Length: 200
Image (tube, rainbow, N blue to C red; front, side):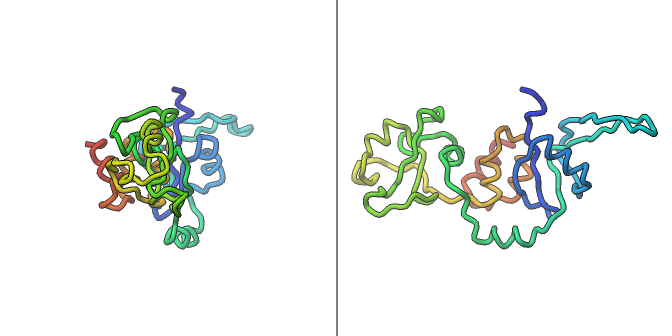
């Protein structure tokens, strides 16, 4: 994998995760002097142009986590009642690509979104009513509830917090980024337990 494809975790100055950026955005923040501090491992050194007067070439070192200046108060207000957007990609990541009925893990193409309480009976298309299901189990459950289909739900669906959603959006999360994000997860979250086990 090309090192420049590795995502950088961006936070505010208080250390609250904001999201993922690529190396171009990271370099732009450095160039605009918007980086308050950096932590984590050194990902890459980007070589720029030469100074016409000094002949010195610019180099920007980009770490795996950078904190940027900005108004974090408005973000905090949004996060108080934050409900992340629901997508199959994030849902499958939340459930570790495991069917929550049969317990087997699958590739994304073999998974589907199941509504625990079917939409036809008033169920919602929201985080707390959807689980990852393999196509076979979803077909078997059809338009009923797990109880009606005589199926056992292996975990209770939950809405991820902002920090958890940032983690779920990551393409290839490094250990130092994972550890940083873990500190922002609720201790009672299933994702907290899963990441803690990965880092052991």
